[in-house]
Amino acid sequence: MKIFLAGIMQGSHLAMTLHNQTYRERLKSLLQTHMPEAEVYDPLADHADSLDYDAEQGRQVFMKHNRMCREVDVLIAVVPEASMGTAIEMWEAHQAGRIVISVSPLAHNWAVRFLSDLIFADEDALAAALSSGALSEQLNELRRQRQAMLQAQQ
Image (cartoon, rainbow, N blue to C red; front, side, top):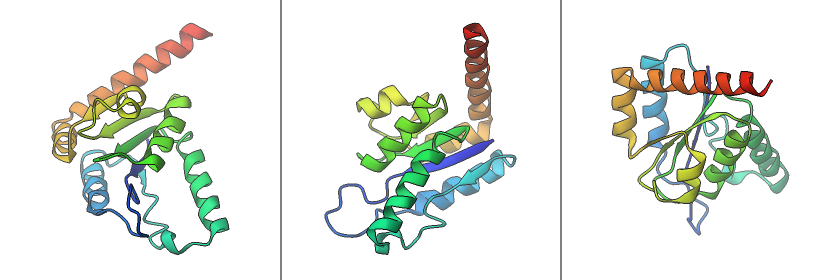
């Protein structure tokens, strides 16, 4: 299973700075422990200095990551506050029929509400679902439902 780890990076900062990114390592560790078969792509891992990219390199990386969101099995979006980039990634995954999991207190936000298959209020809630096996069960059920819909359309 391929997972894209989306989440707030620049957010609404006016300065050229990133939000705290420690959630990425925590979630990758949790996924490795509880879903060892998962192949997790973290866009920041390969592009830690992306704020220093020139316009062409930045555009190429931005577009590549958005395309990748259409190709993974699951997108996990960490959205503690509004994030335009993450919303685009969620949209791309949703439009391609991929499973979108949001980790966000913004369950009322339309991008979170209408693009997500599952919403967890915070990282601890996602961690609990991972460690209990509930998330694996939910993912299996969502995949089963999607498969049934595809078969019905044929």
